[in-house]
Length: 492
Ligand code: BES
Ligand code: MN
Ligand code: ZN
Image 1 (spheres, rainbow, N blue to C red):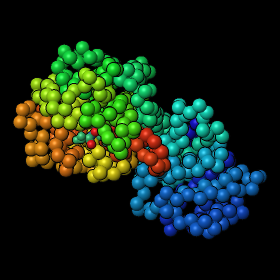
Image 2: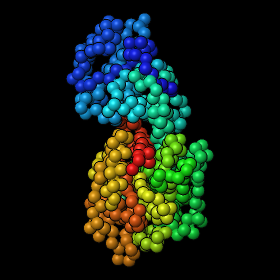
Image 3: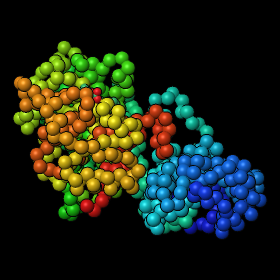
Image 4: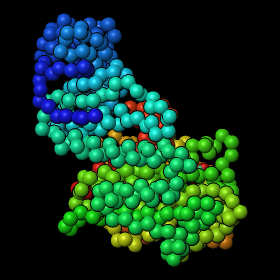
């Protein structure tokens, strides 16, 4: 699919489907639109009246125009109230239109949406992202592709002539999101620690990043007892991935992104029971997937920032070699952990990843993890938890998320709750009581960061969606990639 920027006037554009965005309660046609409607024998006005189209955010209607018309179909998308227009409203409107256009077998599409905040560059990028993300299709595991019909081939962004670079950026970011979605959607017999390392190798060679894969012996030498404790029962070798993007010249900042990389989480000997969603636990490498997706995008966007992408990848399995509930592990910073629940494994792998990362001497660290069911209970499927002892870094993440449209809500790191992790025999337990479960998980991670500004993102909810939701789903969302990219690119 080719997305193009053009200054062709609305009245002169020809093709299969023309998308027009209209604000809520402002659906009377004026100016260019009135002229276009006249040219189309009042079809737009009729469509609005017949369908009682009000311009509500997320709504859409369409109509066919006579066969000899230069425009075959008109698609109207609602933008909501003009004063509430966000950049993400345009991303969503473009997605709604693209989905409808595909259903209507529209090959050539023109999109006319308002420019957000007098910023044609951000507008063009967001629309390109919305179109790409909505038309994503994953046929890898189907013997026959499901959508054999005609595909959208060209998309013209009207009124955005000259914004080719912004569209390219949108495409590159979408490619990062696609990689994350593919990794999360693929089952655990397809995406393993070995293939994750191979994917990282591929990114390194495609986009010129440096790569280091630490094997089990390397991790042993570094004393990564927490990570290796989790990996013990798996038949597959653990892989510790470290990709580095280095800009030419001196970087403005050095940053690190860490992703939880459990290619499957059975729970270990505290095995996940019936109704626990064990069959969905292929998604437990969603943090690592977002990390690799961001690496793919950053490798193409080439900012003036050094970025380290890290994941301690393994499976949480059961076998005669499995860690026992109650085992004591020693992490690479020397701290000892009583594993009172083997299903709280993500924080064990992240502990050693955090210690490793802080030694790189970066200015800030963000980790992403499908860490707790408690976070899903607290914030639902759409919103990720944001935890940070550093207000400035928390603000950076919040700022990056506004433009990305990915939602985060900051939760407190209530020190008092660390009492729930006190152990009689080791430095700490890995699991606290059920209440405040996502907070104690964050407090556990904090034990492995000394002084570098750090934020933890619990993405257990938004990593997956059962239903179609805006430009996502159904299925893996690739959540996190866009916020990470915005964070790296921001000039904080
Ligand atoms: N991977 C899970 C968390 C999870 C739950 C992710 C639902 C996505 C959807 C994590 O390893 C886990 O099992 N967490 C436990 C922690 C508990 C044992 C303290 C949980 O949330 O129940
Ligand atoms: Mn678990
Ligand atoms: Zn897990």
